[in-house]
Length: 215
Image (cartoon, rainbow, N blue to C red; front, side, top):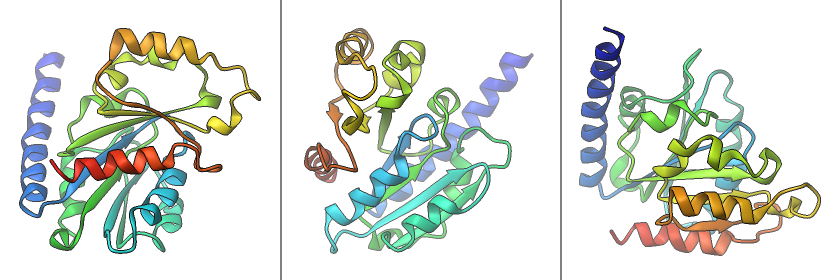
């Protein structure tokens, strides 16, 4: 019975996700779902990304958190539109929550919608939000074992970002281990090493993002 309930929840979510994608396709907006553990640097990455895309590239951000508006407040001066979605006790965003968020956006005036999902390496992977691309962040301080521990998240990624690379050499982190684990889980997604602090890898990330607009 529990399995059937879960299946029904996912089917209902997927139907809304499909509608979300259709709305954004019609407006020619690219939606990027950013997923990671808490503290991996999603907000900091967006603080570097939005200006780097250029003043003529209008971006909106849907920020998912259990509580507070702190991340949205950081991004509001940079994004064309910023919407906070507080999930309460929910460990991930859902398609209906995103539907409500994009319903408040002027989609026709946007190039990108960035969905900053709730920090969690398990739940978000199961829920389609209507995004076009899934981007997973792994930060150096989290350790080099997370790809093997949370394979579902990384299997579904369209791009994988190793963040906070300015800490390589300061913290114990085996890059070879990460690449070896990814070779068994996801060889299609580009693996980009970057640091929002130093700027390393930001150009490569922006190039990948711009490439999604040509789809």
